Image 1: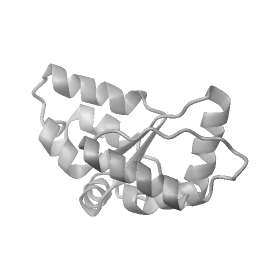
Image 2 (image 1 turned 180 degrees about the horizontal axis):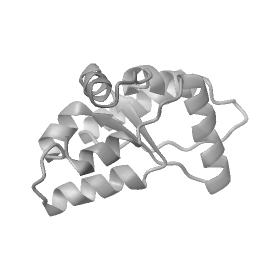
Image 3 (image 1 turned 90 degrees about the vertical axis):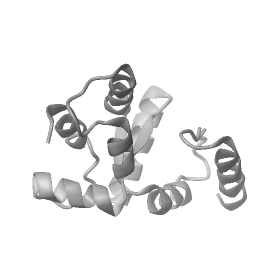
Length: 135
């Protein structure tokens, strides 16, 4: 595994959903913002993070992942890669499980703004509607 990918994988959150939620809210309160990225195995392959060839797009993606406040593992393929490389289990923090948990555990008196990015606009709009209606 190349050095860049190892550096990124080493930044993955290793706490359970409750502690991760507490940590995110703590950073949000201190800084007034908190950037949470989800890393999906296919993103590693599609951006070429798994090879040593440098491209500006790959460098920008790597910087974004490393400069965020939290990097959460998303998907079984990433869990398998992490276990093979680091010999440790990743917690279940994938987007479809963690985001509903996170949103349902934010106190009603805590004003939090959420920005969704990374997908098609219609997916983000449907997600925003879902979040508003359910949380």
